[in-house]
Amino acid sequence: KGPLLRIDGLSVEFRTGDGVVRAVTDVSLSVNAGEIVAVVGESGSGKTVTAMSVLRLLPDTATVDADAISFRGADLRSLSARELRKIRGGPVGMIFQDPMTALNPVMTVGAQVAEAVLLHQSKPDKRAAWDRAVELLRLVGVPDPAQRVRQYPHEFSGGMRQRAMIAMAIANNPDLIIADEPTTALDVTIQAQVLALLKKAQAETGAATILITHDLGVVAELADRVVVMYAGRVVETAGVGEIFAAPRHPYTKGLLASLPRMDVDVDQLDPIPGNPPNMADPPAGCAFHPRCPLARERCVTERPLLVEIGAGRTTACHFHEELA
Ligand code: SF4
Image (cartoon, rainbow, N blue to C red; front, side, top):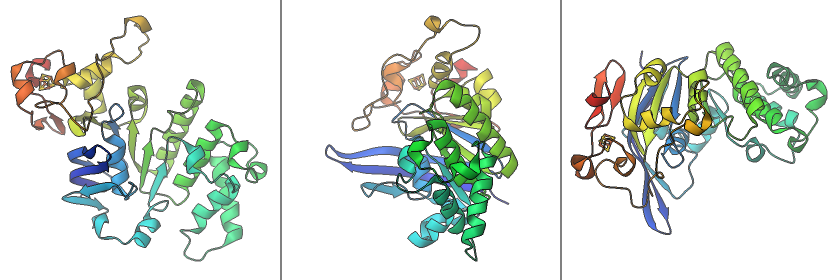
């Protein structure tokens, strides 16, 4: 039995005013049943584009090329738009960063959750779907769900809206949840609550999860395995324990050094110098070289390949052995 989701050799280009920009290059990753895989990187790293290409959620300006994008063994690229709609919100649940734009402002929250249920019922039953919507909102910790189902998204707080999104994502017992920065738009205290809820929802449904985030705190809290992306490519993959204990790519190491910790004052944190590259004109050689403390001549001219350095561990750095 293969992985639940397999992406092989994915590349994505966008047509822009400045010409063609390659956002993702040769990305492969797989997610096993029940597993939480975090895809980590700064904005522009290609992490969201990678996840959105799975269910063809990219704008028309995107060109997607891949050797395989398969879910439960079936190639998603051969599905019609109608077949794909059956998968979205059904076996694959989606949670977006900003529920205000993902929710319909002129429909009550209950109607939207019920619609998510109805869409995937073999014999649509409105009454049962409405009851299920109330039950789902209760499940995700919306207080007084029987009343609040009748409210509109703007009557919900940000945290409550995100709870409603999670309710819709788990409405049809998904095998896979794709969560794109699920807590980024929320206040810190609410973030912790929504994170705890995500963890609970994942444990109860047993759904595998792709967790897209720039926040390593979220990764430590939820993930089993981590895929680190930089400038549109995978630069490191490892189990979550290994990533935190012994990163084998300078970029991952930099991300970890900039993570707030209990034992270090915020002003002693070491953010990675410089900015992510302009993807319209990425650096030659290793794309991380302008920011890398280990960079030398070879890095400027020769792009490091992603190599296996252990079971389930890969890294793309010429000098990864120096980090061991
Ligand atoms: Fe740094 Fe060179 Fe490794 Fe790139 S290949 S991460 S520039 S040491």
